[in-house]
Image (tube, rainbow, N blue to C red; front, side, top):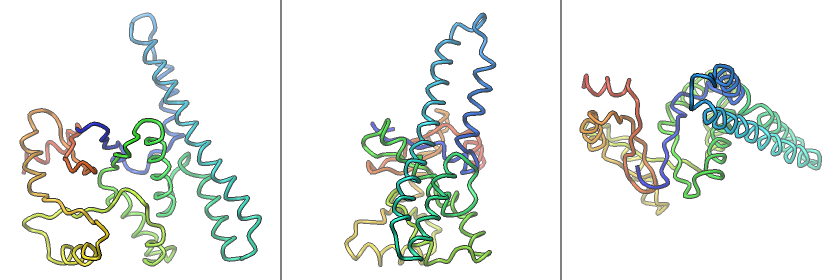
Length: 236
């Protein structure tokens, strides 16, 4: 893994919340054995730091909610006011509570992203992994229920992570042609990667116990420990 490049544990999916994390931290603190475990004091310090960080991110989101509420109170346009109040509702809910729709998933990810890069990773090389796979169930559900339209989903786009296209020998032509139509405008994206080469490198890394990859600005496949992916690759 290159310096500053960090794939996240967002692969656990958007089901986990910061309040869930705080409950797990409290349970772990209660289980510490200071008499038998010489590392217990260090574990306690780390767990308390994690708890503080969770509280800080929740407070950060709610400060945004307060700022947007002020904007809503000053706004005369009824449609704009409704949108701002919806943003307030979302910021007061995530990332503390369970995610309920596509917009909330996007917003929660963005708060996590900001929390990481502000505290730890100034290079902004933080990657959620296959974010599309995490967003898709919420997107499809909201589309089916008419809570979301494709046009509205496009408006809710994130600045980061930037899109990339993973091509393999069996990829259909459609995604590549669509990517080329965007790329020829000179935007500099989407990046296009050789997925077959990534898979071959992951297969070579099986013996090291490192499994999952994510792409970064530094165009590399950093690896993370993921046993279930290892078993899949072994079977392949």
